[in-house]
Length: 79
Image (cartoon, rainbow, N blue to C red; front, side, top):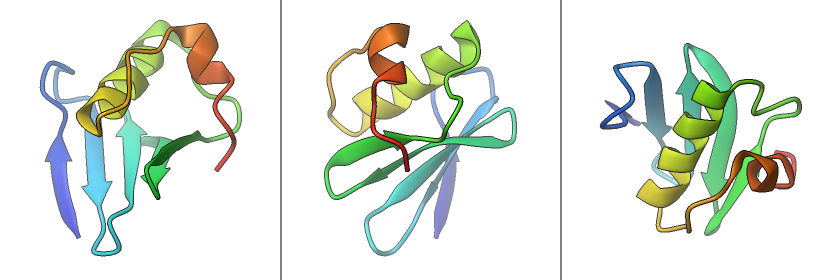
């Protein structure tokens, strides 16, 4: 497992990347999204805040997905 912070998120967004090429995003220590098989999935109830949406957006773009609005993030499939 490899752990790193997303750039531009003030040390509040941490990514855990696993050997099976999946990853999870923690925003303020809470798991909010996962990435696997080329797709992003959200944890139920996320994004709750604009800051969490920003972290999820940066996570998506890090893995090559397009910019998404908060409304689009809320439509992602559940993990």
